[in-house]
Amino acid sequence: MTDHGPRNKFVVFQSDRQGDRGVFRRLADGTGTVEQLTTPAKGIEHIPEDWAPVGDRLAMSIVSPEDVELWIDSRFKFPEDRNKPWLYNRP
View 1: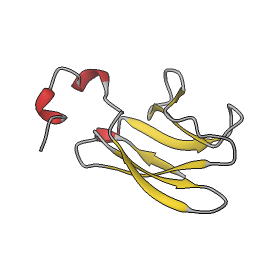
View 2: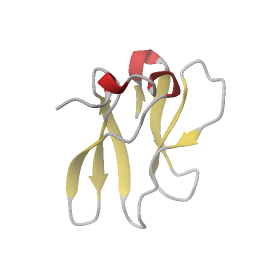
View 3: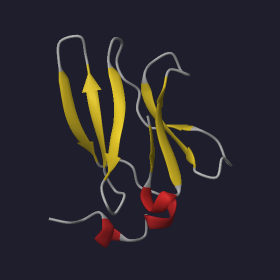
């Protein structure tokens, strides 16, 4: 699955390129390097679902042999937005 990130700047996808089923991103135009966003534990998969409208949170399915959970992860801040505290410090 691929998902375009904030402002259609990034493509987010699941891959096993590092030996696990983590979430990665790359610039949508194909330039730059691939960045691994998550590293799941053995036997776990992280599946990107969707970005929050402002792009500061990523919804992911966390899949294990016993369970499936939906997580909202707010760790992903983009370099051009790091100086905009109002974008991340919402109640």
